[in-house]
Length: 385
Image (cartoon, rainbow, N blue to C red; front, side, top):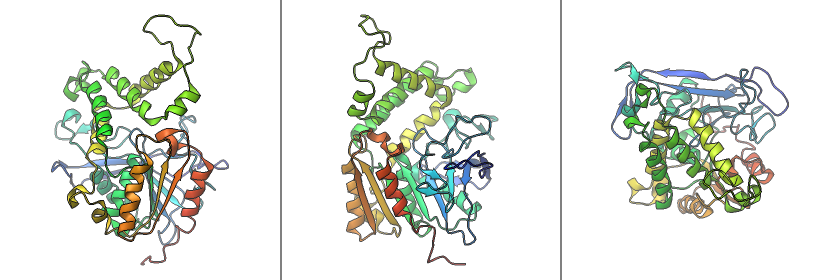
């Protein structure tokens, strides 16, 4: 699981591990997963007092593969490799970094495409809806197995940031620092609408078969393509799309038809086609529902400050000016709630043109903030033997 070889600035070649759990997990919905497996990767070394562990929570279409490369596919670079590694803002010379594929995922953890032991067939439509709360509960069990009592930091962007926030609520004494990046305390009606359109694209695909397409030997590729194309539009800003594509025509002139003419059309179709070859449609449905359901203030009468009052972590909240899906105003809601309860919180709003995807970019101002915030995070002055 740790790096087998290193080059400057990289954790090198990595390999995933699988952790099996045979104790049932009660989900927020009331459903029970009788047993499950989580796929994960680690980078760096856990120190003697186990005070330097950092959990990285992934967003919608990402996975446990956060940094480094695979021996069988050197081009498969971890999705946050620019942030994590020797000498990088999340420095693996100092930190023991853990990435995990969430329950219900399609990158190795138990999910709809894995075998249901009760039937001997893929879970398919029978796999229950999971929530951010459920993911965090499963991550805590993984941390227990790894011997991590308290994380130096829990880090995430977008849906990953919602998990970081939930960690501070569900397990406040197990998080010293929380990095909440490009987040929202709950989805707006517009965001729920985008997710519903994406789900409808999948569920109305003739190859969906009510979620049991595995038995038919097909994949609802058309629905997945459309879902990805729609989602990708929301991840980019208008300025970023204009700069990268503008109104450029692939052949320099109008063809007066309905095939690909504009470069942006070609790009979206490419992204949709690629996504449909590796992502599971049932997983996509469940992850978008987890996004819709996340609302920690709901149980507190809509009062986010009340939901966060038990948190003891230091917080860094980061937003990006061009992110219209989770705008800076949504991050400021989180900051206000934390300040209203006297929490230790720092906030940065970065002027970046990339839209929601800015949290994935190698921006020196953004990375500098994270480096500074984690400057002494590997020292747990409250650690107990």
